Image 1 (cartoon, rainbow, N blue to C red):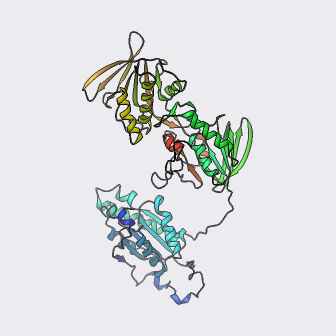
Image 2 (tube, one colour):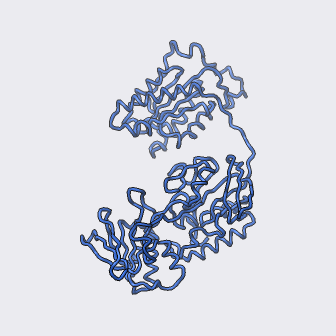
Image 3 (cartoon, one colour):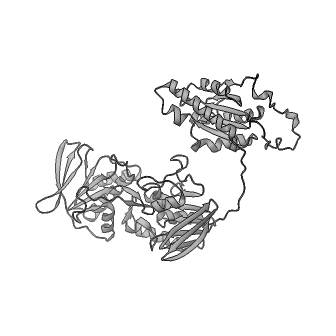
Amino acid sequence: MSDEGAQGLTPKESVTRAPEAGSLEETSPAPPASSEPAGSEAASGKRAVAGDPRVGVFVCDCGTNIAATVDCPSVTEFAAGLGDVVFAEEGKWICSVDYLTRIQEAVKENHLNRAVVACCTPRTHEKLFKNTVGAAGMNPYQLEFVSIREQVSWVHKADKAVATEKAKDLVKMGVAKARLLEEGDEIRLPVKTDCLVIGGGAAGMTAALAVADQGYAVKLVEKRDVLGGLLNGVSSIAPEGVPAAEMVARLVDRVVASEDIEVLTGTEITALEGYIGNYKVTVDRAGIPGAFDASTIIVATGMRELDATGHYGYGTGDDIVTQLELERRLKEGGALGVKDVVIVQCVRSRNNERGCCHIGCTVALKNALEIKRRDPEANVYLLYKDLITVKDEYAHMKEILREGVKTIRFSDARLPEVTRGEDGRPVVVVHDVLLGAALTLPADLVVLTVGFQGDESVAALRGLLKVSASEDGFFTESHVKLGPLDFAAAGVYLAGSARSPSLYATCGRRPWGRPCGPASP
């Protein structure tokens, strides 16, 4: 919904009613308002709607998002002529506050027991419209959604006639289905208050603490023998440069000290059944089977580097490494003992296979600065397509330039090449976009900033949880904007790098979407 629609515009005055003669109203007249005694279901907003279908159709212009491509008045008039349709109306933004009130009025005035909304996707607005008609006394399970935005206007912008006819067909099908919809009832089931957190990295531990701090019991399942996840192999946290070991230790201490968190390391989930509030979880802990109940599930399985074999000479020697391998060397302390270091950005990312890895620039800047601080005499070259930095990350960008790190920009058309010289050392040849010339850089160490993929456990978990994941093994959220931490499956939620590559600022301080807190947990 646009900002203008959110302000609550009045409905567009284009109302079409089904013809009286020969209409359903002859055989199924609406009961007079006085026929329902005070205190009845109708008076309380829970009016019974048994009987022949009385369908109302609401067509949305979506500003010009739909109306620019679809002849909405024509679709509305067509809908009014369909069998069992007793009311049809066009609105500019039918998800606006004012028009939702209009829908409720139409349901009551026309005694509707079916409704068809022709607008955008049910993925984002179905619940809103169901609540609206439900509040007017209609059974919300007798609402049918027709997407004339995603399925019509967005795919037929070049042909208004085709778009309009397709919209009519979809509305016709929606009305046909609405006639057959039966009333549904919501039931209440007892639910438990235990939470299962899958993954013991920064996001998993922080999420577990957040739940436990509210007084709920948590079972934290980690397949490895220790907590910490990816941070266990990292020297410092970007962009602050705080030692990762300190952050992990603080988180682990808090998790272990919490009376409401039970830690199950060396444990894998083998089966999962049930639904929100009543999940049955079966695990294997070092060969010993076990089971427990959970009401909600938080997935924080993390990420791993893509295999860089075959790219820029990786795999031909220990002088060509990835950023995570460099992190382990830096974690050991002291200078690296190398004179010339070349960092190559966007390895296996920002290409035809996948987009930006989101964190590569920040990590590369942090490590380039760390190398220069440990050995000021080292020559560090940073080869990049684009350096995407904001706030603290941009401050690091200016800092590495002051420290003497040399940045060289290359293009997709002429990627860097890594060979070996006569002395066996790596040699990087890069075409500098700004200079318009090729540069040859002998190196003692080549560092590849490789893209990421989801944890290896995702393939099995997606089947157990009945959720979706991308080709790179990252779980897919319910909606990138409206539900970035939710799955389509109710009761299952996302945290940290299980969704996409994330920095500690996201995984360790705000895995559930809240603003960042202080640097230390």
